[in-house]
Length: 138
Image 1 (tube, rainbow, N blue to C red):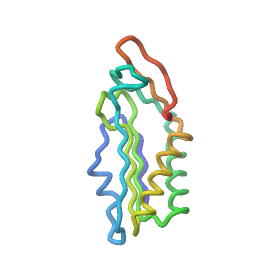
Image 2 (image 1 turned 90 degrees about the horizontal axis):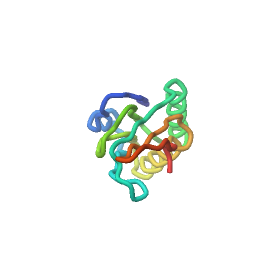
Image 3 (image 1 turned 135 degrees about the horizontal axis):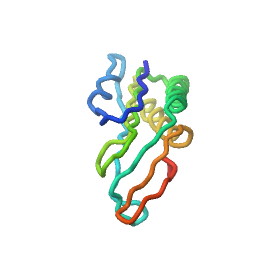
Image 4 (image 1 turned 30 degrees about the horizontal axis):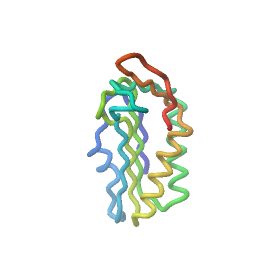
């Protein structure tokens, strides 16, 4: 079971964790990406996220399907936020449950790393003295 979502509304960490609860799971791994206060020594005021939503949802679904094929995952959630996010707000949540922790860890890392490389989501860093569009990956 997978739950894939892009939303302009705040993401709910507890709901994501609850969505992957499974009686056959001995481990749940959760990645929560938040807006940090500095980038390359400059103070960040906010981040603006934009997505090409139809393609982004397809790519996120593909990531989840690939992860489930590679590891014995029971449930997986991938939620990403769009719009303006302030420092400390949650931009992305990935939650994975599996019978064993190793599979949950590996599938979660694969999901966030692949999302940052392949999903058409862009971010604009807002600073006090201007802004810059950057890829949503390092």
